[in-house]
Image (tube, rainbow, N blue to C red; front, side):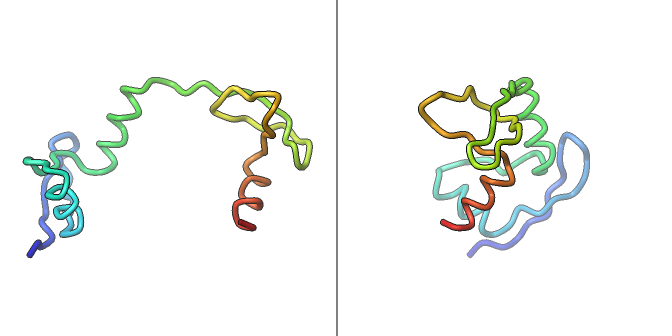
Length: 92
């Protein structure tokens, strides 16, 4: 039913593909308009509107090294550095 379409980003002028899967997603959500910006420009626009992210310093509960996290750590919950978090996530 849907076929990939090549569109031109109104922000950077580069061509990007509006895939059949994306078109189906848009239709399911009731979106009327096709995207006007490529993924990179959409992401940049979203991040610019959000403003800079605040980071907090904590000590990793697993290895003890310093970790920078985008949330304020609470004393009742452990905080992990990105390496330990990745290991724990892989273990399930």
